[in-house]
Length: 320
Figure 1: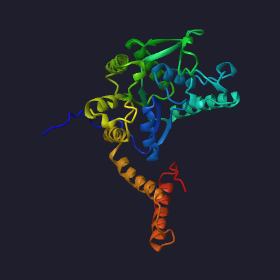
Figure 2: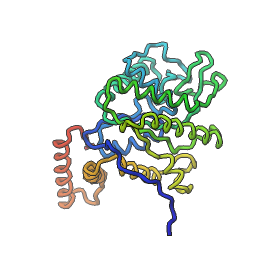
Figure 3: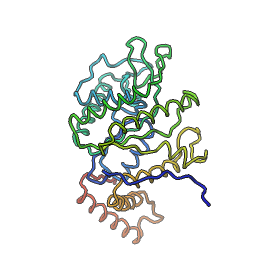
Figure 4: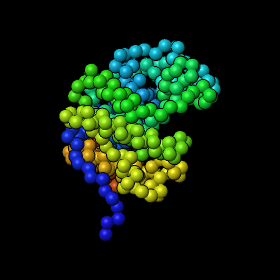
């Protein structure tokens, strides 16, 4: 008896291994994938400007990083005892203006450096709804709880999104032509926009990505991974949602991660991941008797495994 519809998935042409360098940008779902990659000790950089919900925010970061721009004091504003930038998530906000600007400029520099050496860029789009500052007539990355009457809300057209994604690719390829692009749409539902509005938004994002890929069909370095479709079609049950009934829970995140691995992570890398997982779990182990000979032997074996990985993969860092 068949109780689930399955999305056909196939291994990607340019899979990820432990020599790969990854840049992850986009919505809060990118953190779910990014944390998994961090756990398994892949070489990656995740959202230097914090969560970026819409494509124009990602384009702005990439453009400024490639042009090696520098943020000055005019980019910061003070509200609720903290300094903010409309170009970055509130995670970067700070009571000190100087520290905020330092974070912004370090974020640009880290993004640029990662692009120069990256093999893969993973972009997750969360919404097509954007907020435009009434004073500057420019789209912001984050409103930082500034009064809503200072913004107008707009739905990006399919053409606008496609143009933005093309700009992102062009900027990146201007300094690194060998990067593989992975586009996906976040399965997180933005119900604050409204149920129908959320569906319109996701439809615009999905359509724009596939319009882009159809134009680039001769290129094998741009593909789509169906995170949204896996959540909507294979996990069609509220038991796969967190308590807010909006975000995927850990079971759903784990399921989508497994599917991502089947498509994007090479078999050799998956074998190494199992060994990294053993070390990670070993370091979290809490013994009943720390002084027992059995535990001492366990620690010695764990140290031997860590020493091997430090020699074979110098970039891997394990907590003590």
